[in-house]
Image 1: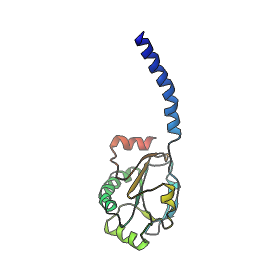
Image 2 (image 1 turned 30 degrees about the horizontal axis):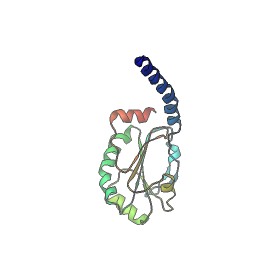
Image 3 (image 1 turned 180 degrees about the horizontal axis):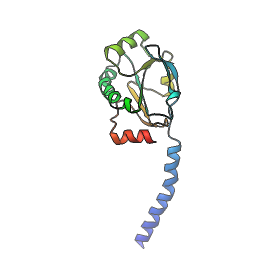
Length: 165
């Protein structure tokens, strides 16, 4: 009798949990498109990449020592995955910063990805950035799979998932 009860309880749980899992996937946060010009004057339009490739957005500031520490790790990811279809976009949050300092910082630290200067703070607000660095990683459909303050480790298996989803 206990086994039957346990079996029925497990079946009930899975029948109830399955729709919740499906709904969670449908309600996963997605990237919010933005446009601008990078620090070299080239146009960036996130909409152009949505639905085509995984994207990592890196929010940073020139006065942030942790941001500087993360750049070598980010450059390694760029080296490993950009040529295989992943896009990287830096966003200087503009808070207590200037275009001139952001440009000098990106050159000095040898950032290997385009960066725009968010002078109004609009992009940071849209992504609810509460501190820097903040990394946002999305699959090719724009579904956010990672949101955090350190560079994520991306395995080959996880990269394949980002491309496939």
